[in-house]
Length: 630
Image (cartoon, rainbow, N blue to C red):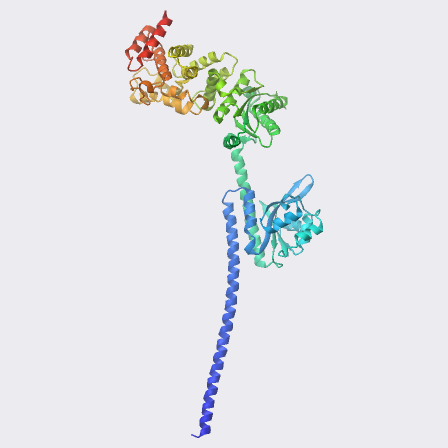
């Protein structure tokens, strides 16, 4: 092969290599371009997924809020703050359509917290959320709500001027010097097919893509659901704390609010007063005119309280015909003025068929009459019952707890037991006893009579007048041991109440002539604990009486019940109750035995000196009774 042949062959091979390289380059370029396009598509899809994820997280946040049982305002504020920022929205707010005597208007009920709104509020001086915004027929806001469609506008200045027509254009222009806002989007909100208002979004984009419209529509639906749920929650909450008949707060809310008021009053050392109100003669109204008119009378008092209470006062229906009002920061002097104003307003109210009604009112002041709120509530009740006892239709100021007589405390305790402690007695019987207690008769005589009548419910052989004898005997015995006046007063109340637990023991046990079974005997042994724990403990102002009652069956040698106390562990007043009770039980007949003569009863008591009784106590008691028998 010649030189030129070899040269041509080499050139041919070089051309083939060049062609292969070119073709490979073309393939590489195609792959490279394809990779670039794929990367771009991946970036776009990733961006779309990020936006979708953020939108889903935003919607999830709304769901979380709807399940949190938070008040409506909290829900809305969280919603508007959740949609801005990374989603490209500069600011958002929710406006509610409202109506008053001047016509329809818009008010901002929630807005996002950011520099945009802070700057706008500084320029406007009056914050947008505090303004009455115009609702103009034909405007973009009315168009969105009435046509139930999303409306967008790039003319931000015109949109703001439409809802704030009284603001100078130059001021609005100053607000809009921030060029980050490119358009405003208004989304209608409906709840239960009723127009609620508008969701307004200030966007950094001029165009509104179809996917964004779909998202905002879905977002608005979640807002509507959130508003509906929050509104329902508020209504349920309101029903839970208000009295269905009167619209006032109920006892439960009153007691919760009272705890907070006590904490506040103690923290700043500021008194507050409670006014207790009880409708007079409700039973007579019900009996004469029917319960519908009784309800009318109760509602009328509620209306008086609503009209006369300050915005910071809390009025509640405590049950039946009783009402309480808390007056924060008001002393007893101011409370008496307020109570008298309420009394006159009730008296001057004329009702259909019934005519005029009246109420008995009591007043007590925290930190003046006592620093124990349970005492204050009881003192309020005592003052209210004193108004009834003194003729009704009047206001009575409570006495400080340390100035209240033992009779007043005992009367209040019996009224509390009859009206609140759910003892198993006929309602008419309880009402008759309550009427006795609030009558104008001598308090001591009434107390003795009521205690006798209660005893007769489980011991038919008990005679009227025995309780008085027991109290007088106990007091005489206490004086022989030089007990202080406070202890003697507590002893008097204990002598009236020590057997009150028997009301909760099956009554057939007390009437049984045959020997008691162990179970029946144990039931009777429970009555001191029942009296102390279940009946008397909730009554705050007789706490010093409770140990006397609880331990009045403890024996000197430790063989008694319920705590097996012995000797000086047993309060002297409890020992006195036990020996007096035993003596009078021996001198009264029982289904299983005849009564003993006083002398025989004393002999029985002497047998247990040093065992059941303190010997010194037996000696003094024997001398006391023998002296009375002379």
